[in-house]
Picture 1 (tube, rainbow, N blue to C red):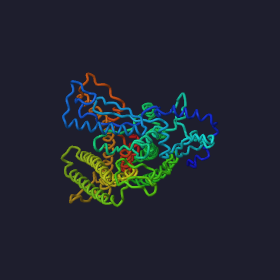
Picture 2 (picture 1 turned 135 degrees about the vertical axis):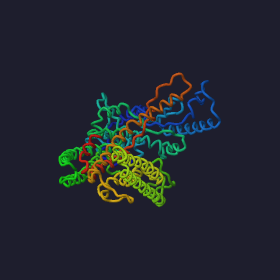
Picture 3 (picture 1 turned 60 degrees about the horizontal axis):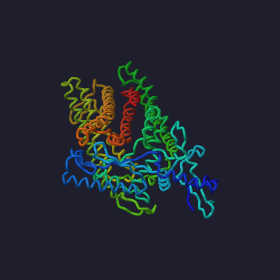
Picture 4 (picture 1 turned 45 degrees about the vertical axis):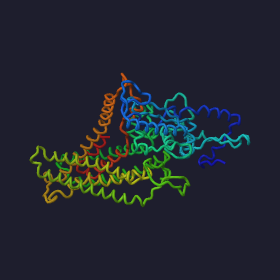
Length: 579
């Protein structure tokens, strides 16, 4: 009487003899106890000691200091909650492997499970897996094999495991037919087992433990071999988009969509770069970008923008169909761990869930947009003051005009950074149920603010500056040619963002990792030699990556390339080279 997905209905009849079912059961018993994928996929990090030179638990070396009474109470509470959490994980059928950090102040707990538990989770959540190529690579909810009942001589047996696509490593000497779960599949199913309150899950409140300080980290563990494969073919995987499926299999659809969009953007930038450089050469010959070719180039960029968006929609739809997410509904998406509300029985699913009424969010939304309005007014006033200082003081400072152009670029970039953090805090307070809803609301806030903050100065130069007044001060453009003034300011904006963002993204994580490791070595006590750091601990110390921040940056860059490119026609080529 088991119910199955209709896509798989014609694969359920099996011609396996009843005597073979005992072999299948033996194979099932062999799979139990063996980690799926042969590895641990998630990691929890708990606090253990308040300081590395404090005696506690197994670490009672004579060189260590006795803890104070408040420190004992704190560490005892940590230990009680940690043991309770690990017990919940083990009760849910998850395999836990705890070990100490290098300085003995933290406890890392790796989490994995066997293949049979993973199959139970996939069937419980109706997790969609890809079928084999002969079934058009479609996606269908996972269904376990049913061995049949002995009282009917196993006539009701059903076998469907052979229809799912097997994901064996490239160049593998032996293929394993059990590898139907990709890396990202195992992580998502394990995450469900850790967080969910359903039967057979651990019901761990990750957000609550983090907020109280009882949990320091929760993250998926890298697979060194697959990470090295992605890194070896980085140009194919992350630049051209030819290997975006490999990115999706490891990082998931969200990250793969971003790099697919980046590859699409790069290809279309190459088209705009060719005509843009021809127009730039003509500008040099004519002595100004304000010439008879400008309207024609503007028309080309307008058409380019429309076609770029149109063809990306088609490509995105193709990705969604190929990856089985084209019919993903909001109800199918798991709630964010930070989501808070009242517990109720869902009238549709008849399951217990958390509910937050939209009327409770409305006052918060109103307050958020009042804050956004105040921030935009403040940024416009700051930009106005920079223009006034430039107008009055540029003759007193060597290269004064360019100095104030750089100052304006710094002001815009810093205010964008500050507002992004404010917007994230407001978004958390508004309490969105799913990650998609959270990111849509955050994108709306940041786009509205950054459109005003990033482009207001450029619009002012292009349309209002020459011969106008600003807060009672008469303004003029550079050499009485506002297109030239616009070209210089836009060039400074773009080059500053390019240099500053790359320096920050490349150097800051390395600096932070080096400093934290040095501080840890200096503060360590209790051993003559400090052991090497585990891979899990190294990963914890690295900065987390979020595609939202990168995509947010690309939205601003896309505006620079399309809205004002007539003043700086080499901008598409510079943007392409930057990628």
